Each structure stands twice: as C-alpha cells, then as structure tokens.
Length: 302
Image (cartoon, rainbow, N blue to C red; front, side):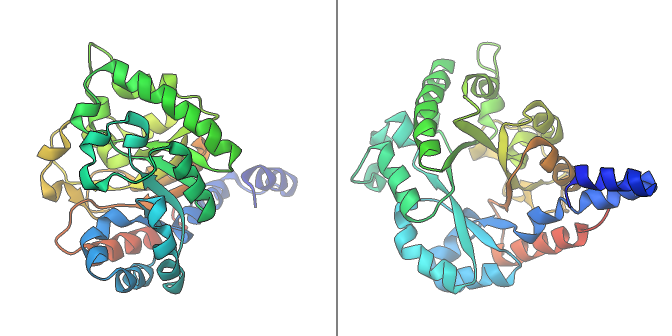
C-alpha cells in the first residue's frame, strides 16, 4: 500500500497517527527483500570459483548482485541464474569516459566506444550502468570533473534511450576541496539528472566527512542507488582511498554509519535499489551473511 493511500484510509477510519511509523517503515522492507551484493566484496572468491561463490551469496540472503563489467555477463549470467540470483546493475571501465586507455594496460577492451557498453548492457538485461572510479591521474583538476560530467551526460542520454540508467559511484576523494570547491558539488551541479544520477556509497561519503543522510536530503531526486557500508568508530576522515585502514570497513551494524536512518530516508529521496559492499574483510562470505542478518533484524522496526 502506498503511503498516500494509507493516509487517506487512515483519515477515513480515524486511525491513530501513532500507527504511521511502523506502516511507513514497511516501505523500506522492499530494499531488504531484494537486497543486492556488489561482487567486489567477494572478488577473491569469485576468481577461484565463481559458481560456488554465487551460491554462497544466495545462501547469505541476497537476491541480486552488482557486477563489474557488462562484457563478462555472457559467461556470468548462467551462473547467476543457477544460484537463484539476478543482476541488473554493473560497473564499467572509467576509460570509456576519461579516455585514459594508457592506464588500463592489458585490461583495455577491444572496443573503446561507450556505445558498446550500452549494447552489452541491453543484451544482458542490465538496467543500471555505474561509473565507479577515477585514478589519481584522471582527477587532477576541477576541469577534469567538468569534462567527465559533460561526457557522462551524453552517454547518459543514450543510456536512457536504451532503457538504461547511468549512475556515478563515489569514493571519498570527490569530497576533498580543490581550489575551494568540492568536486562532488561540481558533479551534482553539472549532471543532468534526467541522464545521470548517483549511486551514493555511504561509507566513502562518511569517510569524506559528510553525513550520508544530509547528502541524501541535499540530493533528493538524484540518488538512484545506494551502497550500504559501515565504518569503524574512530576512523579519521581520509581522501586517499589507498590509506584507509583495512579494518575501517565493517559489517552493517558494527560501525557508526546509521544504516537504519539511511534506509528510512531512501524512499523519500527516490532510491530504487540498495547493494551491500564491504571492500575489506578477513572472511567476506561470513561478513556478508552478518550484514544481511542485521538488515533482516531491521525489518518492521520503527
């Protein structure tokens, strides 16, 4: 039941407004019921035995996975489906936008046309394409960010024509001021929200000194996806992702990020899907199961 319909029926029936919080929270349950996992979390396991790893992801309570390369989906999709999962979101190489193919080495694909990424996404039923990272050499000035925003807007327009949504995934470096301006603010201003939105990574935003809830309110209507990640208490703000302590990445509920508030706010700002990710863990499979247990415990709570 939609919240608007509930309010109308509540008024007609003179129900107490005290019922609203628990009914409203059921809207967030949709994120939990279809929770996804970013496969970077289990990258080492995937490299050794992808089929077994995907089955372990399903057993840990996940419904969907987010991949890292649309071109690989031809091989991955049968295993994803066999595990009882689905996938509608994938990252793609930043070089399609930055054009720094010299930084890709042997990982550079044959086709360097962004339209080939869209074609692969269409072929494999991918609904969300994610621009996920900039190396230090690709983000030396604000002009870089403005240039990439322009290119992403053009790619995003083509994505929308193909029924695909293009999103930008952040780290913490976008929050480090350059010439008195925050690059993330440049992206918020420069992106056409009809063509490019955001996959907000709440861990990296927090590490960059920004409360995820405040960002979500500021970016209402521009945040399409969330990466749910928790941060160890006492970790200092850090803009260099290479200097982050490995134990800074925590299972959901074990850190200081208010996951519950984030999920409560998500439907108000337009979030469609949520993905758990934990960049570092001594036992990733155990960690992802602990995180889904935490999410299940949240269901139905005010």
